[in-house]
Length: 475
Image 1: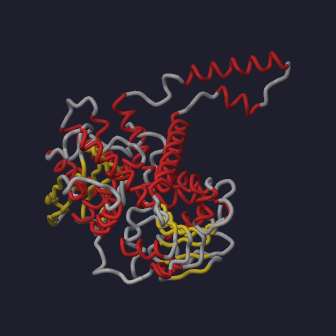
Image 2: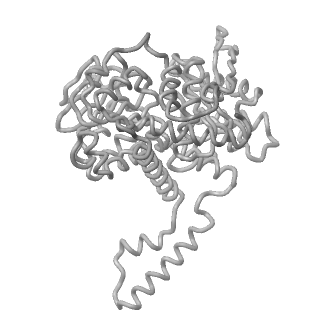
Image 3: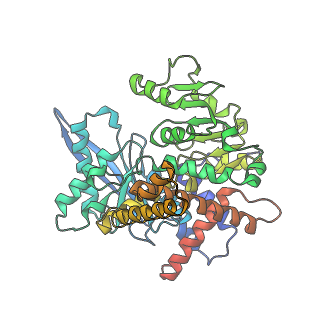
């Protein structure tokens, strides 16, 4: 189909996807523009002395909507970071939180830097200085704006930011909640590191547990019957791929990375590929499989499920016509441009959207923030009580049957609920309920033509955000 106008930037792509959903809702004049506009954005530039020179760094923090507080969103360290990215990602966070019923507003930010070019002590100084600039302006605090890791950042950077905030606000009893995605020893929560990848796996499980959804997408069988290509083995893609290779796993036939792509029809061992990447810095030379230097070409390879799990805009007007997958699962933020989304929809390709699929990170961040605000570990108050009750149940069964209970049942009932069990169970439940709501919205809102999942997800998010704003008198 013809593509309208010039290719959209990231922020414009998000806005046009929102417009598609807004066209189905009756709102007061100007309400749609108010929804799409970013509430505030700060740009900071600061110098840091690096041995024999002084280097100036620039960063941003955008708040899209503060209808719920605190606002939430990652901090990205990337040479491509700019204000457009900050505002687009902040908007996605607003809608993402609404889709999965996490009571946060949307924020995002980052620093224009290639973190690989600096050693750890230097990067620590830069991160702390960036954090100080944002904290002084009120863009980091446990009550108002809570960052988390994103591309180029990790638990390490969150620990540096936490320490900086504590130095500036030693009186804040809840200082530990000023960031999420922290190391466990500093108040982090088990399961946060892999949360986005695990949430994406739960999203896939929810989809393939609906035979009608699978058939509608032109697929057959269960998730374990599918041939999968994954783009990006970073934190999200690696953990998702690991979960996909557990019991009754699909075949991961392709892995696309920065230096090229691997293909093996019998399936790739993700752990082996990841270990090889850790040793060599890339996938080129991995033995026994086909290698393609132009990895982007493998986005167009024949497969059942394509999972872009790295950068935005990798599926665009230039390659959308050649995508062969029947199901695209957006584990990354904004991997499909607006033009590509239009083309893929017209071709009948099913897309599970980013504001649903990769929401696992913010869901578990919410659990971590609650844990920090409550100042108590999840499950701590009831675990021993549950274990004791379980032992009583086992004793009752053995007394009534005059037989010993099997070990698996004894272990299950007497172990007590651990924090990681609660996190995984709640994340699974959240993703399944969100998918059910999206499916129901498609059924109710579709007219002659079946509504796509992205539009349904945006409809849900927009209605929740608008309702909150109206109740607060903000619109």
